[in-house]
Length: 130
Image (cartoon, rainbow, N blue to C red; front, side, top):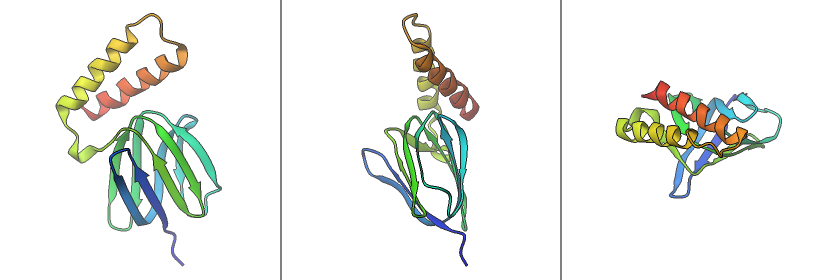
């Protein structure tokens, strides 16, 4: 009996990833990192900046995601996000610019605590990539 399930990651430009041989995915949910295995209870959650780790029969893939919504239902994990890239294709200039932009936003005094938390987390994750 197979322990695999499906994953579909979609961003505004295209269907970013679609696989049916995945046995585990770790997602950066706002509640913390969540590990998804076959037959996981149905969930819907928001994503925070972080790394999505996809483990399949053929490879391990890591993607940086800014935000989004994730749903797991009927052994299909659906991820909808506005910004995602494969870490192996990471453009160092883009990452550096994203860090600078987030740090500029953090220096503003009128941001709320939730936005400050997400920006701090984004900077931390991007620095670990860079």
